[in-house]
Amino acid sequence: MWSHCKQIDSNEQPEDVIFEKGQGQVIAATDWSHEELLARMSQDYYLSHHSKVEIARNYGMSRFQVARYLEEALALGIVHIDIRFPAPASGLDPERLADLLGVEHVGITPTGADDLTTREAMARKAASELMAAASRNATLGISWSRTLDLAARHVTALPPCSIVQLAGGLPVPGSGNSLELIQSLGRHPGVKTWPLWAPLVVENAGTAGSLRRQPEIADTLARADGLDVAVVAVGAWMPGLSTVWNRVDNRLRLQAARAGAVAECSGRLLDGAGQPVDSELEERVLAVTVSQLQHTPKVVAVAQGAARADAVRAVLAAGFVTTLLVDEELAAALSGEAAPA
Image 1 (tube, helix red, strand yellow):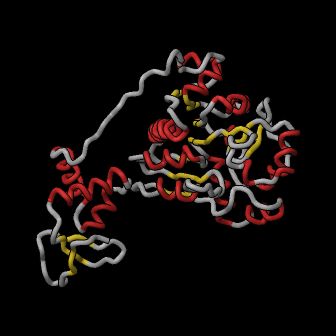
Image 2: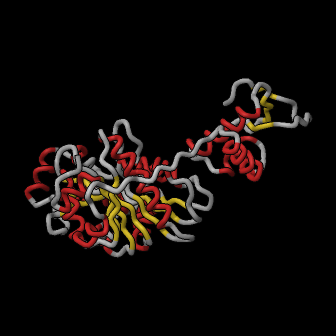
Image 3: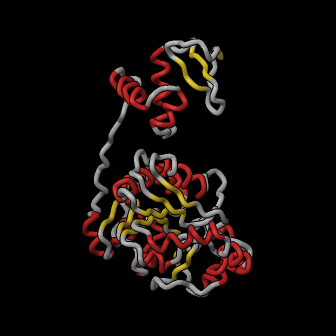
């Protein structure tokens, strides 16, 4: 809703009118300057990631007018775009690391002063990879992690394509969830989404089996058979390094660890050789399978922190990762070098 606006009679024809969000009522901006209007529209576009079509609908104008107003906001200095090319990671060669790890591409982002700063840098890189990998009419799958949740907010454009949610919902305090992530990407014009209307981890195998038989869930899970691109996150099977760890009891944690679990990817556990771990969790998870990822032509995996080095090696051993995005600290651990100061 906007303040400083008054409802007008539908027979009046003011020069500048907008529609009240969610109401469909015509209202006139009486106290806004032209510059304030430009600022508000720019905020919707650049910060809230609304499409030009959405903004046009909300403000009662054409998307071509919106485009002109956004250009004007740049020209007047209301909007400043700051492009910062990342400095090369200290002494770490992405191509050399890619050869060492046996993947097609490695991206290295700076390790920040804190976890949030590091995650933000990785999110921007992941968003760039997702936009670069997306093509018209392609089917993309995306899992959930705190980094990927942030990445979705940095995706500024996608071609018409289908996006499949690869893992059920896993609410984390202070963060979004996989449904919000998929909905965020679905705001782009021409993008169709296939949400997974289920939790990532349920209480028992019987409940999971019942959910898998529901048509809308079965359809989404089946669409992972035909992915062109997948974006996933890598966790380590230990406290604080996997969001799934906190969703199961200690009995299951220990059972999986004793069975050799080293890594967690979309709720699927892998041992050091990259083989799926036979544990109770496998039957309780609603998510893409390791086999489906192994049949996906391009898989982007995201991970940060030196503590996840063994987990990343395990996921790479599974053979489905083509692009690996890591921070400097993890890159150094994977290469066997000292982490940059």
